[in-house]
Length: 394
Image (cartoon, rainbow, N blue to C red; front, side):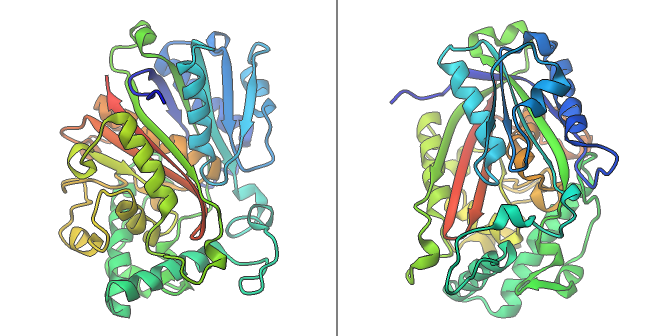
């Protein structure tokens, strides 16, 4: 099987402000993100040969073609739960690598606030009836099971475990507060996180990402053509995706503290990129932290941190901007926001800007970066689909 390494370049990206965008609809968000990407790449809609849209909403390919007035080209809607944004990017990437198209567009978009529901709207979370979880299990409830199991497995008391999650949330809000496009631009303290209203113990209000609107976009071409558009393009070094059999919720031996889908997707990406030691070779991680415990288990599952080693890393601030491996420097889903279809592409946007030295707020810019990892996942513990992309400098 041939690797995707160094075959595809990202030559333009765009991202809207994330938040409660009551004055905009999905078309507005698509236009805003896409035109930032067009301007970034120095192209226009008529230069695009094919496009993909990632969304879990009711949108179709016409959600791109109509507002962008695309010239009768193929536009494909893809959906893979909360992994939809990265799925759109992956499909576009492989179409370019296969030389079917020369210049393509990938967009992720969601307008969750319009649903009027505090959390994932019912159509997103509907599933077959289960005798234990029922048809109305919640994402916070499932991730809470992972958190309590992690505490038990690694010998953390209730107080130690809750404080560990609070430290993650404090870091995320610190990073998001400095990000001009983030949804929740507010710093918090450990005490505030510990004393916040409980959603599903041990997850409190500040352990859970918000319900957010937003869009992100990327323009891709083959590496040999990239310099026609810009000198500081980014390169796809590896791309993995893994969909699990989804039987975790039925198994009494399911390990809530390790997510095999994340591990398998990471291994695929590492092999393509030639990465032997992720901890030493990757300079930053943008991961799918829909809950604080999700960040912790993700970083361990993708082998950036040893299993059970998160507490030492977090206590030593190793995941902060000045630590050994910055995690969710953007603020993550927790603070930047999580419009489902947009998040996977938005994570790549952060890495793209960091590689170029163009973080919107100078204080957020990493001093040295050559490789970044974007991790995007959908589903819940026991039933995941996960994507991992490795993005490098030109």
